Image (cartoon, rainbow, N blue to C red; front, top):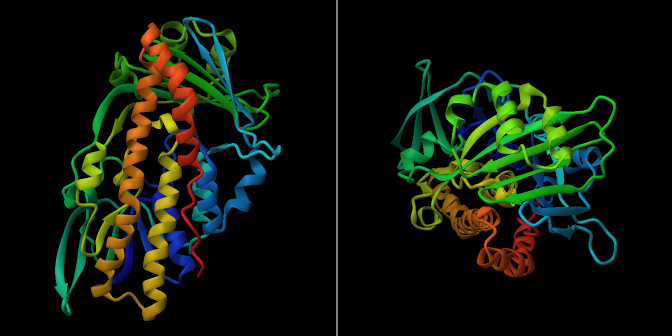
Length: 402
């Protein structure tokens, strides 16, 4: 009998295990891959993520490696107009996000866990519940025939989560857009300032941001699924399609970044999300079983909040379970359902708003260049909705205090 089993060793799964460890709760993390999965070269972490990482005790391991982003420049491809957004506070202190290597974040989290707490090549196939001493426990069936019992089961198994499906959550839906993400490498240095560059046009959005002096994270999103499914596993084809087709009229600096791509880090994927009302009204938990990260709230990347919100989930869930564990000296199954219910209610509306805000942000920015859309984007979105976005990214998920 395990106290806690976490399915998935991504950002949400590892961070939740770290949060529980700080309370003295041992968690077994089951990962179907042979090693840490780091699909996607990098991600951008806003202030809310750094607050969560600070609570988990690892922000000091990552922050010195990545400089804060100072400014963002947004170029309208149809008009040539450029808007700039500052990430520096009025007192001069940088409050901007940092873009980090995804693998570095995963390694920093995994390094905080006992060596045998992550079990790789472990694929979940079925879940059932069983009454045990008057309380519900989870029975987890693995592909190799292993059966594991757990007082608490947390699904952090991504967008197509087995645990979410068992809870009855509706499947994520296709947003109508796809994304290419890559990592450009300049062995002699790229010589660029640590600013975000974005380019907006009808049905497409592109951009890049330096990670350090020699590496740049770049992305390209478009409304056309085109050849995406066919070229998803062919990085050389992806790169050629971006340069010669989708982004051929973008500024030379962007095309040069794409040209320097590390093919091993190049990915194509459809952008999926869960309807926010399915999160608000859906079953995010059942007794001692719940979900976190993309398993709960898959969203489009337009606010860069997927990984950030997963870290928030971990802190909030760890805090609720940890408090119960410390108060009782153990996990009491009858209290677990109540504890998990508190976590769900704390997160439900927050992540539903992030899903809606991300989708709306992507739609507004790629919807076109007509006068109506231009007014909506330039006069309303960037002047008013952006202020709401900033509030989203300054959210404080709290401390663990164990």
